[in-house]
Image 1 (spheres, rainbow, N blue to C red):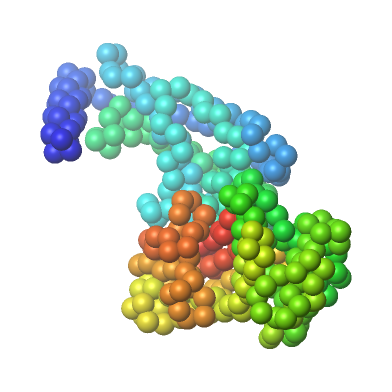
Image 2: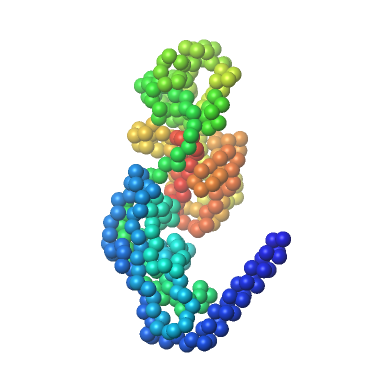
Length: 363
């Protein structure tokens, strides 16, 4: 069935191309007289500060004047709105992003769409300011670049925000001496995505022998471990971790059991000489400034990578490994993360929320 569909599609496209060629034979274009589109909105040099509160709102409408081929009876003009990193000057085809194809001479863009474009495709980090350049490509047929007309590019400046993926989850507080024994601190928690009283999460303990417990919003309901044997008791003794580091915490309130494991996170794969061939770990470091500001666990490394793939894993072992699920979301035993272009990258692993996230930003 797939082969038949492909053949039919090829035939349809072939017919369309023949039709286009026939039309071009009937109408000889004088490319000296054509008029390219021109962007009229936004203004060149415009500056936009993007905010999470306005994520779904209209940022602006791209608007441009129509292209004029000055020949009657031509196919309808189509337009392609494109973006690129400003300093690339449209010289690297792999960095040019097609935003929208349209018959219209305008295209709306929301705050959230611009923020995603800036962060994920233009390498502008959250809360940073950078320039993006836009242009409009007019064409009669994509197959014949003799009909392509480009507008003059327009650069705009955007300041991004950190987009938060919202997800429903139950929380279990983890008060301890590392955060002032605050059972109502909803930043130091682990999560149950299935609301089944089975919780998991990662916590950074910045000193050795941190003491902690589990609680539900106050000391009225809390658990400790009297015998340090993995069994929880109401109002039990403080649980004592070991060496400072990032700890994986698992709690089952149905069985009143818990486990904690110190983890050292790395990337491993075949993306360039630095990683070798799935036999070399490159370790990530905890972002302590981020932890001090948010209580959240984030690790990162800046690495020279080549084309290839990699994954995250803990303690140089495959028992705990994270690969991509969808977009920037990771899952246990997920798919390999693909590096499409060689270069120096900052790799970030965010273990602080109900979803584990990553970013891969080319320097």
